[in-house]
Length: 188
Image 1 (cartoon, helix red, strand yellow):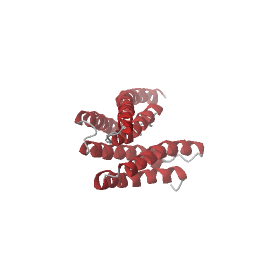
Image 2 (cartoon, one colour):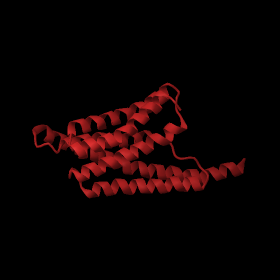
Image 3 (cartoon, one colour):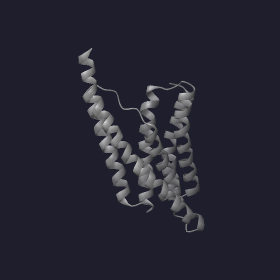
Image 4 (spheres, one colour):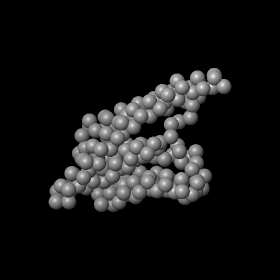
């Protein structure tokens, strides 16, 4: 449980309330962006280090995607309250997460383990976590705010596309798990 990857995951979790305070309470966007950037970096490095150091854990498998979802939810609320993103973007991401929660529940009810996060799933989250700081920076009425708007929406569109696409892939994997495995077990 006490590993470097799990420490990074926990550090990322602590960044959530700090980000909310900086972005909404202080409107200290530079510091809030730094917290998001650190969160994105730790999301990448915790998995890399876990595999490289052979420190993968059940805690990491559950906490990492859960904290990713919390980060995304908190950031979406902040960006919406600051009028940086439209409601339809939030609706797509929330609908996808609710769908995936249903898939996870179905697997659990059938007695199967949760699905492992795929490379594309990590890429989707990575893109979204990189889009958010740019979209927050885009609130600045400067030349770099304009550039951040372009980069932010490029990452956001790509992230949303991957986010929805991976939900389809996870669903297909869940259906195969439920329908194929019983036949293998019965045949043995």
